Amino acid sequence: MLKGFKEFILRGNVIDLAIAVVVGASFTAIVTQLTKSFIQPLIQVFGGGGIHGGAFVIHGVAFDWAAFINAIINFLIVAAGLYFLIVVPVNRINAHRRHAESEAEPAPESEDVLLLREIRDLLKKQS
Image (tube, rainbow, N blue to C red; front, side, top):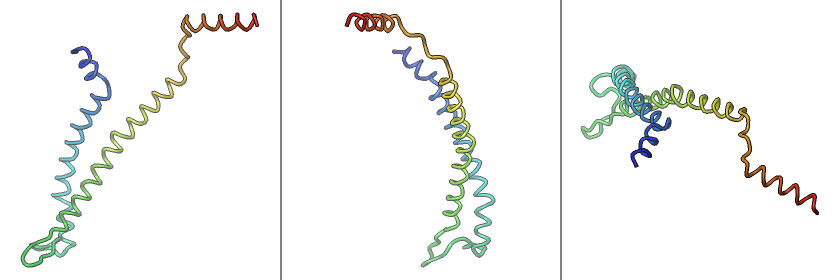
């Protein structure tokens, strides 16, 4: 039971996934701070500036559309970053691996297959 668990954990996909989660979380934190510190204030300036810049107020309640636009930009930056930094290289590696495997010589046929072919050939000669 522990041997199977060890094989599962040491399988490349699980390790790659764990690394991707950690890198993705770190990258998300950086991008979130970037958008909060620089992009959202720019949106608010273009939205009129002041206390309610980037928002509209109805009956004293502020609807912060700048924060929503900021979240969309944040998502797009994170998605693009993960795609170009993780997905594209992994796809290239997998394609290269598949290409190398397809060029590899086929495995020698087992003795059972050879024996069955001999039997088939003998039966053809007899008929």
